[in-house]
Length: 312
Image 1 (cartoon, rainbow, N blue to C red):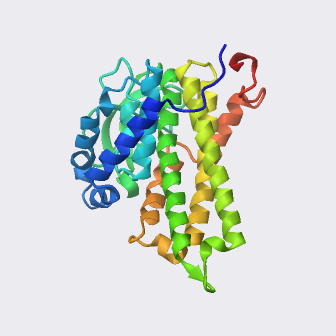
Image 2 (image 1 turned 90 degrees about the vertical axis):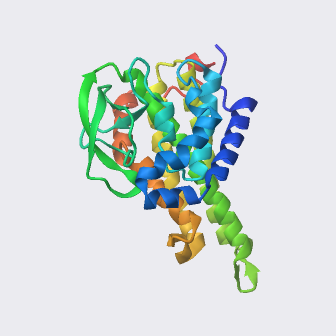
Image 3 (image 1 turned 30 degrees about the horizontal axis):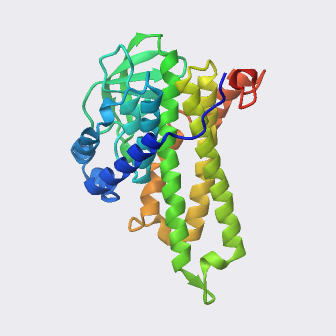
């Protein structure tokens, strides 16, 4: 058996670049600010650009190349903190009349669907599938509690994809947060020198970049695991999610520290990225619950990893 492919194809990367430009043209950083002011406009703000790009024509469940393109699209969407459930639309389930799929917790199922219409399917981490029949108690970052109508227990094959694609959106946010921070410390001076010249600052940035690059590799591995139909795909998805949440905590901590107080102001793009990363980090489960779920699945034998018999 051939080993894992730990990079995206040239076509997928080009699709991601096109998506980055299309979302910039649609509004870029202003999209999330406009959507926060009028959540009901989310579809109008973002939908046309993604439709023109052909995003919803991607067959992510049966074509590995198009799955890679979808991942690249999610990363670009995260870069702009795009106020739309791009990953969830791309993960729409087969055999159900639904526009998208959200992975939810069994207790108080919630998702970032405030202000959106359409037919949405939901699956919990035990594979129980439902249709979203209503929303209530909308909160920050477009999070709303969901009312569900049970459909079946056949969603085990939906969970890994539904967890991995949002991690690609979070990875795009980490890309942008570090990019903004590198630019910021290159401009700011202290004691007559740019902040970027201080060794302590360089150490902090290195720590953040190590975390970000680790998620980059794990995201590609988890994507390959899904594309090749590995039985460990859900384990790999949970491992990616746990690592992505841990990395986000480090990256945003470092970026906020190096930006200082201005990093929490609405005038700063980092503030919007940080705020809208929260649903990706907390739904369907936060760090501790994700870790518990992963340990419960692999605690007795561990993750298969790169050097197991099945990946060589």
